[in-house]
Image (cartoon, rainbow, N blue to C red; front, side):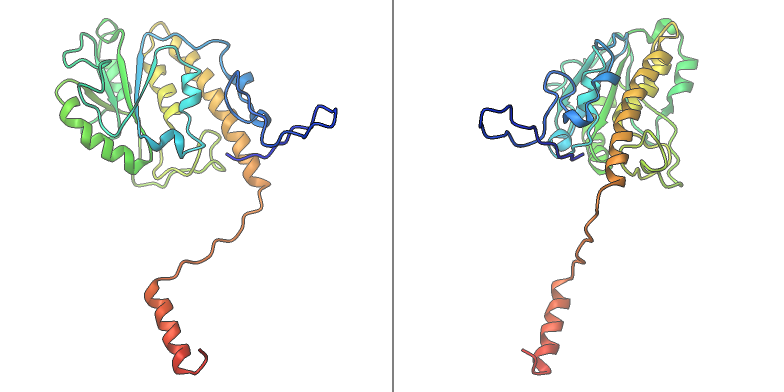
Length: 258
């Protein structure tokens, strides 16, 4: 998300600072789109530990990443940069965990998370570890395949409903979609965590946690949608193949134009 905002100088003939004003003490976003009023006053405590393997480019090249907001919303959240999970890179995920480790990813062998919770007694799913993969869908698939040799022996594959036969929504069709999704039911990492915690948290606390997190995401999407509605989009130049350009040059040469 790119917003332009310049601070006025404080007077005294000093040069006015340039660049956007940033909310450094809070959400870390430009002040004009600050989300601090929507974030919980302090990170939410959960019985579920959330571990996210995020692609090295997820934060550096994706200004719409929801990971920074997740980090400010949850206490028991751990971010691991990398392209795959190994025993050495994931000390938070032991090979023989005393509590369930759920791998939330829409793989063919994944069980519906709600069904898993209904069939698993509350005492058997306390202090669950919820593991997610963050990146583009192509990156996430590659990360999933690369991590399976380590995870398949002890993690439980689960998913939230996704319909691969229907195109996903955009932010102009849903108040929670950060960018166009490939399939119906696909969602941002923050929304996926919120929906999962609704099922996993005991004593009915999941619904309140979900609503708080969804409120932050809803505000973020509203800022982005408003920005795009007022943005003048420049037409993209059509890329042409080298062989087509060479053919045009030959035709001009034959016609004596070059």
